[in-house]
Length: 372
Image 1 (cartoon, rainbow, N blue to C red):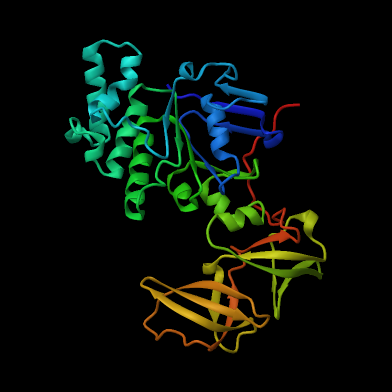
Image 2 (image 1 turned 180 degrees about the horizontal axis):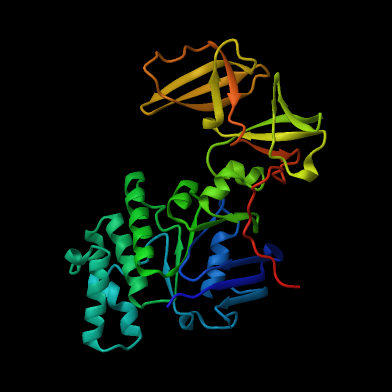
C-alpha cells in the first residue's frame, strides 16, 4: 500500500542555524517525487527527517493521516536506498536481499519466495550466490534497491542513488528505477542534484535552494515556465540578459539591445514600463536572414554534435551565449561571422529585475501552503 505524505511548516536547525524553515509539501500516493537542488540546499536533510534519521525541530510530518514525528524509524515502514549502496560485504546477494525480511521474523519459506521475486524483478537472480565484491556498481545498486523493496514498504526513499555510477550506467539505471516504480506503484521520494536525472524519472519535482522550495511542478511545467531565475538556471541551460518592457498602444513591447518584439502573455499586474531579466534557452534563439532587424551578434565558436550544432555567439555588449540549431548540410559558421537572431517569443521567460518572479502567464507552482 502506498501512502500520501504531508509536511507542514517543517523546521530543521543545525548548530543554531535554520537549515529548513517552515517548509510545506504534499506528495501523492504512488507518486515519484524528486527533491532537486544544489549541494547544501537541504534536500537530503529533509529526506532523513522523513525517514526518522534526523530530529525535527518544528512542523508536522504525516503518512496519510498519521503523524510520524515521534515514530521510531523502524516502525515507519520505509525502504531506503543510499548513495554508497550500503549493502553488507560479508553477505551474498541473496542474504542481503533477505536481511530485512529476517528482521521481520517471517517464515523461512516465505522469506525465500519473496526474496526470489525481487531478485528477478531487479534482474539480479543470476547473481544470487555472489558476494558484493564480485558485482559491478550497477549490480550492487540493484541489490540495494531489491533489499529496500523486499520488505514491501509504504514509502521508498532514495538519496543520490546513481551518483557513483558512470554516465552510461546512470542512464540505464534511471530507466530501470522509473519502470520499477511504475510497476510497483510505491510512493517514492528521490534526492538528486542532477537536473537531467530529475527530469527523466519524476512525476513532479520540488526545486530547493537554501532550505526553501522555489517551485513544485511536473518536469515540463518547471522547464517551460520556471517561477524565478534560480529555477530557470538550475533546470536546463539558460541565458540571462537584461531587457525592458515599454507599453505602446496598450501593447507590451520587449526590447533587448537593438531588438524589439511584442509580448502578448504578460500577467495583467506586470503590464507597465519596467526593466526585466529575460531567460532565453539555447534552442530559443532563432537564426535569421542578414537583413532581419534582430539581435546583432558574431559567431565565437561552432560545435557540430550530429543532430544539433551548438553555436557560441558574442553580442555587441561582449556577452557570450550558447545557441542550439538543428544541424544542416551547410558548412559550419566561421568564427567572427556576423549573424542576426530572433527569439521564440512563445517559449522565452521574463522575470522581474530581481529575478524573483516570472511575469508571464502559465506559471504553475504546486507548493501547498498550510491551512491557517
